[in-house]
Length: 240
Picture (spheres, one colour):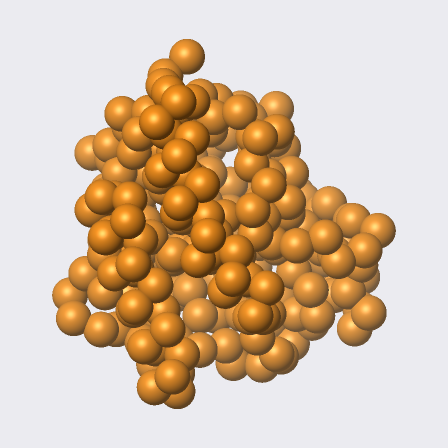
């Protein structure tokens, strides 16, 4: 099976070369797509150097910082156009450990969308302040309460999609970012009848660089659940 790990980047020069090497070392069926939002720290140039020396590394350059959601959407289209079978979302800052990738592959035999959960077996988060942990944990409780989506970690950004899932979703209609983007995709997959499952991971706060969290990202996640619930009432998430 062809497998593509999508790595959105913005100012990740300290992390990029090592995280790419770790992904490629999992096995020869893995390839990497770096989607760089014109990082001012030179991340894009590092990405080009990696791609020039390794055929399993691909790069998409974007002209400005356009956000996590649109980066993944471009990555999904890239993967579908090139007939990848499994498509992964993963952070480039080592908060998501590439050592879990084989676990995702194994779980994809059962599930159409596999989510790496920080809260499936207790709370497995390292180096977060209590305030951010409570925000994340509370957000997932809120999602379950409002939508009925039975996931412990609907906001996780460490994921594996079978290509059939992404082919079924109208990617042009996805407009959310950050936490909201992850909630929206998981909800749509669930409502369309795909098998959505979780595997346990340990999440470690980034090694280097700055977090991309913002108040706008949080606010969007708060209202997206009500939008999804309303759109579902109109039958917009039925299978094609």
